[in-house]
Structures are given as structure tokens and as C-alpha cells.
Image 1 (cartoon, rainbow, N blue to C red):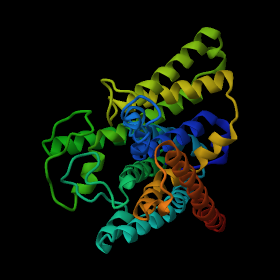
Image 2: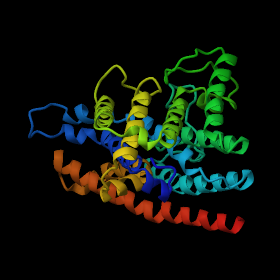
Image 3: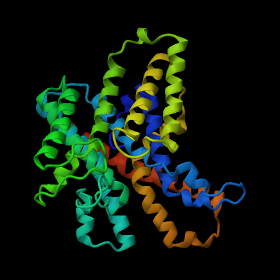
Image 4: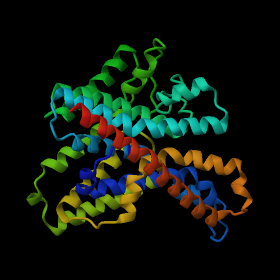
Length: 369
């Protein structure tokens, strides 16, 4: 779910780009895991469930990455007015074209009412009285996370206006303050659990209150903390095989804690969020110290991660209602072919929608300067 992109960022922190692509593909695999369950060549039942049932951790990982990337990509001070305008235009032209196309496509295929389609394109969740942090999801179900992303961007933009130098600190304080204020004023439990709801309030305020009172917002704070660590810990203080080995150990352990069953399984800053923070911090610090290999495939996967995340439900549903065009495949061949089709479609939407809409945004910015 790459909702923000910068070529400079991609060149500077390859590990972040790689993890973004890996997160997107694992979320896709978690929605495609039943295909692997059909495999009968190995003596393992429900192999897909065993491998990818916890693929939802990609959402928490995306949020941590967003906190890191947004702080990093806004380092240049363009001034309060121009900085805010640039921030808004870049995100709007990056996020909305693909989101609108995805919601309309799934709405057409599933015959979803127009009112729900329009609501989902804002995007807002379908039911703020249902279980957090999903709140009834979105017509395009994976887009429930985009609402959190945009809510974070709004706070970050305001924080930049308050103080560009301390934008991440101001944003952190804003997230924490809103969380406490909303939960206290609504008489709701103060907890880090992402599934903890707030007491019902005015229906017009419920969407905003539900988002900013969710502990899922703390995952963005983790990303901004990782950014500060990456930027301000001197490289000279990181030398040594012991520390490099420690960082590799943290990377490996974090990844397997995310994909496996453990006490920290689930959404939220005290579960998948904190492990994602450990993974992002250790991976970026290792790259800063020892460097990292350059993979064209992983870079591409990171580049198309937003398209991959948002479009794969449309592709899978289209294939399913057409019975995979009667090619009668199952198991591993179906998994491989489906993955290739999703990556191909994501590459097409990335080039036709993301790249072109971002270019339009840049042209608009150039005229405003």
C-alpha cells in the first residue's frame, strides 16, 4: 500500500521499499491462501492457512512505513503555505485516482449501491458501530486502511504548518492528545488494544472520533520514531560485526514473529505494530551501516505496492465470477498464475494511473510555485 512515493527516498532507503513490496504481496497471499490449501502434493493440510493466515500484519507494517517515509520525504522546508499545498497535492494525486477506480470497479462487479460507492470513495468506513479497527470495512474491503492513512496525513500537514523542524514531534503529540481527549470525553476505555471501541456519540462526529481514538494511529508514531533514529544515530557509532549480527537477528526474528502465531498476533501498537517497528528500525539501521543489495524485482514490487494492495481484490473477484475462464486449474499452478496476473495488473494500473496522476500533480505544483 504505497500511498506516498519519492525517488530520493527509494534510493536512500532500499530496505523500506523492499519491505513495502513484501508487505503488499503477503497481504495479497493472505487473501489468496485458499488456493494453496488445495495443494495435495505435500502432506500438509491447510498449507495456505499455515503460511499466510497472519498476512494482515502487512497493514501495521504499512502504517509504520508511512510514518517513516512521510517524515523523510518532507525534510525540505518549502515554507508553511507552499509546504502545505505541496503536501496535499502530492497525496491527493497519488491516492485518489487509483482508489476511485478500484471502488468503482468492485462496485460495478458486485452491484453495490451508489451511496456506498460514494461513501467508500471519500473514503469512510461503512459502519462505525461495528468492530474496530475495521468499522465494517469499505466497499473495496482493503481500503479501510486508507482512511487511517489520510487521517494521519491530515495531522502531519497541520504539524508541518505549526513547525516544519519539529513536524514529527508535533504530529506525535497530536495523535496522542486526540487519543486521550476523545476516549476521556466519551467515557471510553483507555487501552492500546486496536479492537477497543468508543462509546457512541453524535453520528456526524463518530467517524472522526473513531479514527483518532484508535490505537492503530500509534503505528504511525513508531514510523516517525524509526525515522529519527535512522537520521540522527551516527554511522560511526554503528560499526562492528556484533551489532550487525544483532540487527540481522532482530530482522529475522521480527519477520517470523509477524508471520507466525504468537502472543503478539493481531493489529495494534502492542502487537504487530511494535514488531513492525522493530523490523523497520533494524532493517533501516543495518542498511545505513552495512549497505544492502539492490534487487530490481523488490524495487518494482515496492513501487507497485499501492496498486498491488488496492487492486488485487478486484482482480481476484473478477477471476472468480468468471470461473477463471474455465481453464480448470487448482493448487500451486493456480496460485502462481493468479499471482502473475495480479502483479501484471498492478504494474499496468501503476503505470497508467499512479505514475500519470503523480505527474499531473507535479505539473500543477510547478505552476503554483
